[in-house]
Amino acid sequence: MPKAELILLVVSVLLLLSVLATKLGGRLGVPGLLLFLAIGMLAGSDGPGGIWFDNYALAQFVGTVALVFILYSGGLFTRWGTVRPILGPGLSLASLGVLITMLATGAFAYWVLDLRWLEALLLGAIVSSTDASAVFGVLRERAVRLRKPLRPLLEFESGTNDPMAVFLTVGLTLLLTQPEMSGWQILPLFAQQMLLGLLLGYGLGRASVWLLRHLRLSFDGLYAVLSITLMLLIFSLTAVLGGSGFLAAYVAGVVVGNSDFPRKTALLSFHEGNSWLMEIGMFLTLGLLVFPSQLPSVAPSAILLALFLMLVARPVAVWLSLPTPRFTRNEKAFIAWVGLRGAIPIVLATFPLLAGVEAAQKIFNVTFFVVLFSVLVQGTTLPLAARWLRVRADEEPSASP
Image 1 (tube, rainbow, N blue to C red):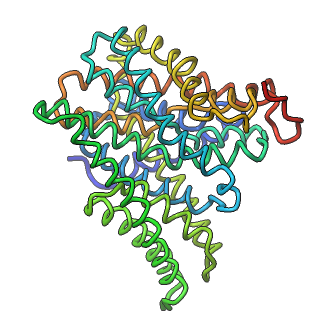
Image 2 (image 1 turned 90 degrees about the horizontal axis):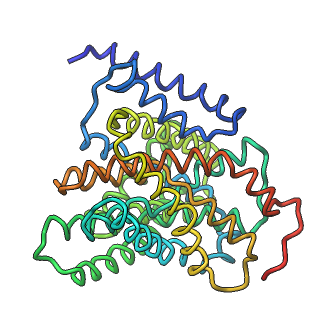
């Protein structure tokens, strides 16, 4: 067992390299998360760092905690006034869009990856949700401002589509490990998770606002501790009661972020910094977890799957989820291209590994490759796509078809 000071030295060096990488990523137009993953891979067992890490349970725990922080922070910075007009389209993208993406990608995976149907659908569920944190990191670095309907829609989608992907992944994993179960048996579970997630997220969010307004603490620093405690309590209590803790964390964040209470500015800044720390830590951990030497064997089929996801599955899901003429053809095309895959699919890919699904290692390696390909191709071309499709705030919208 390495000494504590050696572990802390390695962690601090990796974090420092990741922070510095954000500057390099901004200049190169490369999303920071890609560099965080690269640093983790270089430090891992197959890289020059030589750090052996294959603890999937720990990686899943780190990813879960980090996702709670990121979703809650995303909710804090979501302005309800900008979300309300796009609530319907956003919910459609976050639910129907994820389901369509899973079905289309799963069918293609069944054809190219020699998986059983349920395994192929499981892979489709794992890569079905988007990660907009990378999108807005690139757009901020390159000073690309999107027109008003697009930015809140993409922010809302990224904050609400993860619970759907988590549910589909867990449900299909159960069906694979418990063959006696029927697919119809998980539908009530879905309704229960979404309903409890929404209700408890809102109710506990209101309770959090009341505490932040009325509780007088002796030291200012304790308000940050209180905020983290309430966030973790909302997630864990909702999950224990059978709801979606991730959805509850995001909804509670929206409630708290759109309310007034003392020291709000300081707490928002605190959570923004924590969100960055969690994102870096999550990507570094997942980079350490992967074995790059295993990726070439799945590269050809994973590239095909990534291209299908980017060029077919996501666009079809967007067009079917947004059937109204409210969004122009160019805006829908940009929404489709923004479908970056990030750390969440890699975290979800640890679920079948821990459950002992037969093709779990293959699914994990393919998922990691799909994420890398998506970030590298879509992440680096987002500013170009925004300019080409004329969806920036300083440009006139194109006519609807």
